[in-house]
Image (cartoon, rainbow, N blue to C red):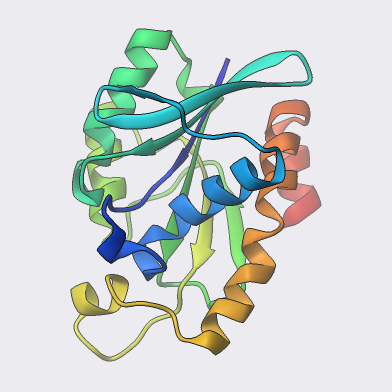
Amino acid sequence: MKLIVGLGNKGNEYNNTRHNVGFMAIDEYLKTYNLELNKSKFDGLYCETNINNEKIILLKPQKYMNLSGDVIIKYINYFKIDINDILIIHDDMDLSIGTFKIRYKGGPGGHNGLKNIAANLKTDEYKRIRIGISKNNINMIDYVLGKFNNEELAKLNNVIQIMPNIINDFVTLSFENLMNKYN
């Protein structure tokens, strides 16, 4: 069983904000395969599906970003999912909009959601897709909670449209091969 988590903040006021690109990636997968997050448990909305005969849980935590790990650890424990079988999709200010990077581990880089995940998992060695949102000179909190402009959305959509393929390949390829294919 694999757990695919898109990070974001709940609530309509956060739609299309930089911090919600993880939610956007999950939404793209759901749209592509005509699925919906039809279950709720442990402060998360999720659905179950199968990829290549393996059970998959797609999850959008419904606590605020900085408490994402509190939700994820409950799913890991309840469904007995190995940490090697989780994939976290999140925003990254160190990458330009329109780019992404797949990594096996790494520090939080100032991302409070990742800090909370590492604290709950007791490791920073978990698989992730970092989606670039670029940096700006304005206040970091205002920036990550700000909405994309049309030019940024066009660049971002090129990345978001690839996410269903990456998620499917996460299930079927070794992680090294996944990184080699997309990085």
